[in-house]
Amino acid sequence: MSTPAGPGTTDVTGRVDLADPELMRDPFGGYSRMREQAPMALGSLPGSATPIWLVTRYDDVKTVLGDPRFANSPASVPGMDVRSVREKELRARGVPPEYARYVLDGMLETDGADHLRLRRLVSRAFTARRVADLRPRVEEIAEDLLDRLGATAEDGVVDLLEHFAYPLPITVICELVGIPEADRPRWRGWGRALVTMDPGGFGTALRELVAHIEELIGRRRAAPADDLLSGLIRAHDEDGDRLGDTEMVTLVLTLVFAGHETTAHLIGNGTAALLAHPDQFDLLRRRPELMPLAVHELMRWCGPVQGTRMRYATEDLEIGGMPVRRGEAVMAVLVGANHDPRVFDDPGRLDITREPDGRRETHVGFGHGLHYCLGAALARQEAELAFGALLRRFPGLTLAVDPADLERQLMPASWRLARLPVRL
Ligand code: HEM
Image 1: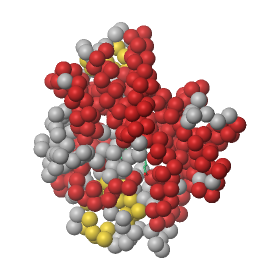
Image 2 (image 1 turned 135 degrees about the horizontal axis):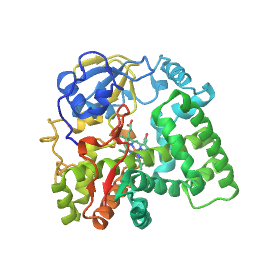
Image 3 (image 1 turned 30 degrees about the vertical axis):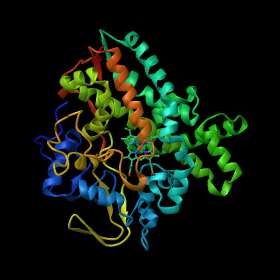
Image 4 (image 1 turned 90 degrees about the vertical axis):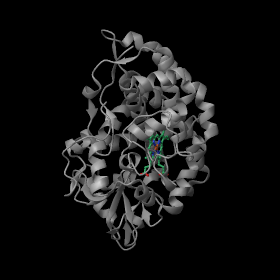
């Protein structure tokens, strides 16, 4: 994998197309140029006419994510009907109006008391202590997957994304939430349809998912188990006005998708980065105690989420010296912040001994502020255990292709591999 900053051709002076193939192929170079030349650039997403301010400097990113004058829900903007614009965009993607609420009313789309209430209902399952309790089970899943890896190799080559990085987090989050094993492969297909935002597949996938989760809730209500879904059903049935039907479905949907796709790509990107930097790979193998720092650095260097959900200005204000008007949309470009030379020395260098500057977490790969990633402790633990097990079991692991030839899934504001072919 070539290092993040490099020459490229993305024009950062006009309106930036977030789906520009050049920008998606080299987001590190593209967003770095934006940060230096136009730290508040205007961009847009495919299929949407809404202009989005792209904020790329570290300090501005933290301001946007920490400032209560920015809302996650367009409904929080006084006097503006931004929501109907979002509903129209969803209709264009094949989402019927009665399903829009499953997209627009999730935890990441709510503010204030609504957000806090939803977050409280599930946050207990993701505390450091609960995550530590899961450790032996995560280790067991990782070891089982690695046991089977040799048998999947063809001519000595295995796709580590397909056979390790994906199944590990999806198994962990599905066990935690309570998605039966037999149903899990279908979630993979729905996940693909939802993230690619393909107009043909999005609406259908969403309708099928909602029906599936409702059916699952019915099954769990009849036969409760020791999982998060049963806990949500209890909260709903005992105190129904605090957790509505839609909210319950949306929570399950959010947790399963937020909990596996991202973590899978951190494991994928991180493994590829270590293999492309044999000195760092060897250092980590010799000094496994560096693992927490290494995961911190890999999140900064090649985190899978490169931009947050949109935020909406609830009043006229100024960011990075630029006026932002009430109702306008802003995206915090995490990759811009994580490679900002004002905060990180030589940001393009991968250095697993890089200290987080006295603060617990310097990078913003998990976001910042009230919507800071709920699953960060779980994701970190999964990545630490995944890299640890890989290094221990396969100390001679190498990439089967040149790092520059690694195939990527090109998606706006995301950094994802399509495959990770390795030799064990
Ligand atoms: C929020 C990244 C793993 C659940 C976020 C945000 C980011 C993020 C950047 C904030 C988005 C924004 O402010 O617009 C990641 C990355 C992960 C990861 C990079 C893996 C490496 C997980 C896991 C879970 C999870 C394992 C498990 C449940 C959530 C939830 C939110 C969230 C529920 C919304 C929180 C809120 O709105 O209060 N994540 N995440 N994430 N993440 Fe993660």
